[in-house]
Image 1 (cartoon, rainbow, N blue to C red):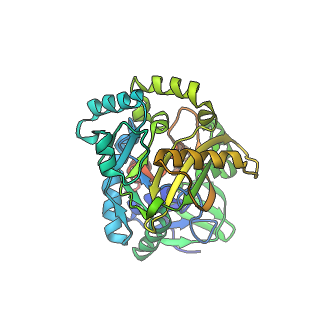
Image 2 (image 1 turned 135 degrees about the horizontal axis):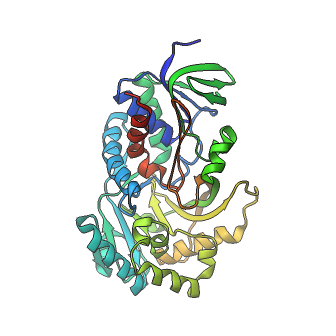
Image 3 (image 1 turned 30 degrees about the vertical axis):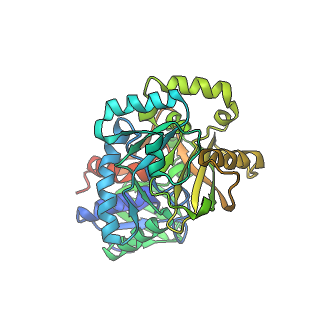
Length: 371
């Protein structure tokens, strides 16, 4: 048996790493357990978009705090981060109205753009674009690089990582694994949608499901550089800050009439550019406890078609396709449960873990009294 840990974190995705990083700052001895030999889940299968401006309520508060942590940790751990923000491209008057309302609410966090202003930020964009907005606070990272670099850096700060270690049970003061029991003063369970495997009663009480995403990596038209992340009118229906604007209702009504197939797959049309120059595009959303393993080609083709339309190009060359899966709970952005004394179950149940995890972690550790 190893010496007792101050904190055991179950799960080495971004939510788990955020809690480990916060605990290191508090001088705690930390052990991180993960069933794989590296992070391979939702934390590396995303856009790498720290999309804080479009959030609302607690998510906005956590996102603003997380922004500073991302910048600090990028300098410490040596991974790439972009401060180019986000451009929201509007292709209809009701979308322009949403962005005008949003700018009025948020002040300097939102900079309205006319069509020429959008094109000044984006080298290639559809002639359908009539306006937009720039969200200067948003960040981008390469999740495949950043998550691995964070784990490596944390290990150098004294965090003990036990990879290929499956957790079989959790109780106050102890975490049971396939490699033995780890004693701990405090435990954070950060396993995303797999909370239903480890603590099904917690998952059931919170209504946790799996949200299945369809995403792709494609070549960039004419090898152009897209500094900001890019959102669309469909994004206005996905992010709470934008969706709360009165004109978002008109956007939904128009899309319901004109493009119902996009709403049927719950598309959030957006993209980011990887450091290697390719674009990460997506995404669609499907909810359930267990998903069939078969991907239908029409959904993928829909993502390709709509991205090409947003860019104003004829076709995109696909480099890779994948599924993302994250925890989802209707009407809740975060799961924070206390199944046993000294144990917290934490999951971001809204697909914004990269955006909020570093802001959420201090609140969770405060609730544990872990200092």
